[in-house]
Image (cartoon, rainbow, N blue to C red; front, side):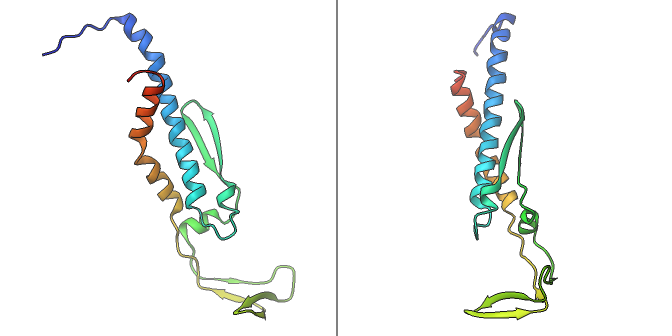
Length: 141
């Protein structure tokens, strides 16, 4: 059996370091989610992957977001839909190197990519690492 005595002064000195470790572990987790979103986002043009912004709201609250309007459709997918021209009389695109014009296109829909969920899950798997790193940084271990 191991006996230990903890005095109130010991706790008072420990609390700020524990708070600092918690804040740092939260920051490391937020940075990981942000990095994962940039890595796991669809990379066709890189617009979405490069658009993620990390914002610190307070010591233990961060938000990650994007202003790219198709982010949620890429993540959750969509059912079939029809594309119509907005500023012209016809749509113009290429198929097998041939230019095609069409009044409308019936799109089959978009399969869900679930990159947001994968980004969060990958960060969650590393939380123990982040806590350990934070505890080392504030010299609690």
